[in-house]
Length: 401
Image (tube, rainbow, N blue to C red):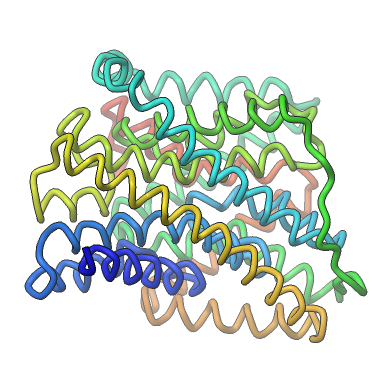
């Protein structure tokens, strides 16, 4: 029992460190964690992997929203989250994401008895048609744009898409950080520096009340998207977020509902990528691959993982909200323009460390692409073409590079 509690604590610790440091992901720590199996044994090590992924999904929203340094699963959340931050409601933005994360875990656990029977059949029915689903979503988005914006948005989607093809086909995971940070995080930082943006004089730690019906629908939509992302090959949290954004529509002008759904997508993606080992016998994430290397996952192991996931979600909720309060109090005492400048320098240094000179080039090009929708005042969502277009072409069996 003590070894399992130790594994739980270590997993949460790994997740916190990976979540707070931009550019670091639990996948980067998998080799280190797997090495612990010689000391702790297979099950405790597997628990460390699982709980690190869950805690990271909560904590990662802090640097994503406050510093504009996203991962693929949180990139689109940067946009509405940053808007709320500029209104003095950064705590609310992160809390909405945390509510979604917690709701996603609850949804995953409560619906598991149903999805045990549904998932295997759904997996076989959909996995060969992912590209048509994505094409329909992008087509709907473009048709909903006004006038010349259709062509501008299509151009942004294709430009970022071809950039993603070049990067992912040649440099894979090592260049994902500069690619996404360049397109989504850096434009906001640079605009804040050059426009001399200042944070509000004070931050509110209260939030607007959300109706229970709206809350449940946001969690439900996000959770379904996260479950699909956790099971289907090639369809990650990013693509599911795009689907979710269109389901929620444009009525959510503040982005609050969207932030809840992003949280639910993130945790459901992680939970079901792990449960896929049992449900479909196929690991659907780096963490799941690590677990599969340690042990065979049956019903008994799955129930253990679920218990640890629930405990981790509860602890991570408390820790994320406390860390957010501390971070915002710190932000209120410093020059935001200088913070953006220091963050920009830090991101360039991280890019060089993790990706070298090639990463620096990718970073520069990604920033240029990411600036276009900001300057032309169109939806920045189309920057996700960097991940969606490669996914479409892969499932269509088309290779351009």
